[in-house]
Image 1 (cartoon, rainbow, N blue to C red):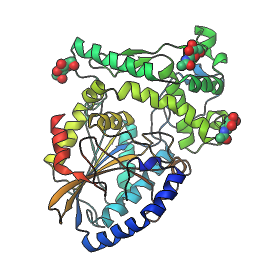
Image 2 (spheres, rainbow, N blue to C red):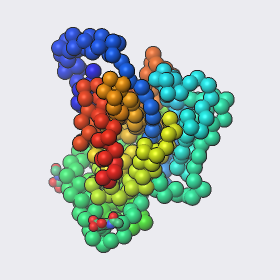
Image 3 (cartoon, rainbow, N blue to C red):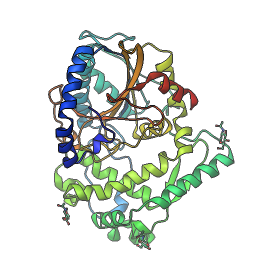
Length: 411
Ligand SMILES: *[C@@H]1O[C@H](CO)[C@@H](O)[C@H](O)[C@H]1NC(C)=O
Ligand SMILES: *[C@@H]1O[C@H](CO)[C@@H](O)[C@H](O)[C@H]1NC(C)=O
Ligand SMILES: *[C@@H]1O[C@H](CO)[C@@H](O)[C@H](O)[C@H]1NC(C)=O
């Protein structure tokens, strides 16, 4: 059974619902056993890479405290990242076989195709996936020799001054809507920002006071300079340490003690992505090349399963360009968790004689990532049903495939 925003479910609503819908569920189970004529025809998995070393090179200027040491270079996938990606891959191979789209033998190029951005962390993530999903099959991960690959590179394409003005204005509106004072104050204190190099050398001593300025130019990533971006980098540092299984005192120096504190600081990270990747014109512009790549798979290719390995920015802009409803991932600190996968599924309903779309966010909970917990059909990852405006989900969570394709064609 699916209800809108089920991923946010509070316990009470959940329990009430359980009672209220018990009989309805039973009805659907019986009905689906009798009349289940659904066939999975195609799957496109849009994934974020696995756990990586923080990318920022200015963390040391933000805090007098010692940041964790990493074995890999900034931005690279970690050994733990490979492991955690592989755990989710094992689940996916079970899931794909159970749904009869792949057989237990090695897939060929028509069965499965992996395409990764040409960065180390995305290529190695995709390799980790295929190695665990299809052991000893030598499935090749494809990627472009261009670095960066224009399909994944989140840079502005529209060179008109008018676009620049509109986009910067939309970003400014999003900046003005942020309510992050208490989050910045919490972060000031975690970082000991008033003891940082930024404070001592540049007199920047309060993250909430650093003005955020949007910047949009063709061929560059959209940017916002100021406290928001800086804070997002620091939080990424905490989050990757948490995901990578570092000891508690190495994650934000043990100062993020509970879930409510995490939620307060994570609002900054979410706010950053809202400003930089989720405003309307920017999302549409940035997503363009990846959307055409995906549209081609849906419309022209008959590859059964495609893995597209990119970044959180790619997921954010694609979801926004396709006008997905906002999602809230249960048991995840981030809205685009590491290794998380947006899974586009094309089903054929023999009763209706129609193709249907279902989209689910399949991802590991923060706990499953941090503790590298094995996954299987019995111990599954988290699954969140996604909804698209203008493509109405039925009570099983499907919308019409043709509606989805016309949405794509209108973009
Ligand atoms: C660029 O942006 C402007 C302003 O939004 C728009 O009118 C124009 O169609 C865009 N050009 C392209 C090629 O998308
Ligand atoms: C945020 O804090 C600054 C000072 O730190 C203050 O000027 C501003 O009014 C506060 N904004 C809100 C919405 O509380
Ligand atoms: C979380 O930790 C902070 C700081 O130690 C504390 O003030 C707060 O009450 C705690 N919240 C919960 C829900 O435990």
